Length: 68
Image (tube, rainbow, N blue to C red; front, side):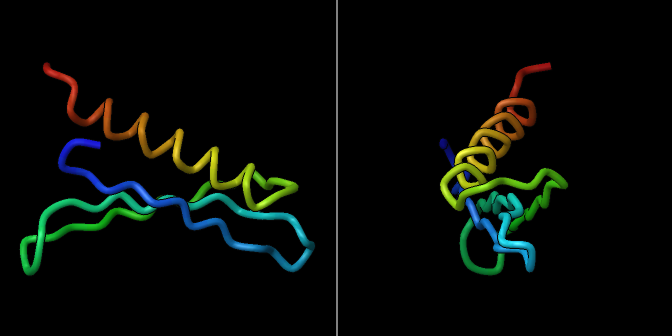
């Protein structure tokens, strides 16, 4: 999404549910940055956690790049 790379990183919990995580990266080489956000919600499937993660990442990028 623009200069940002958004990747869902769901993680299976010991209870069998999935935790949602998203990585938002930008830049290249030594000028790169990577923000990882983890969420408290639990999801029944890997796909549901991934979908939530991507949506949250897109929302963060939109909020961050919105003109002031």
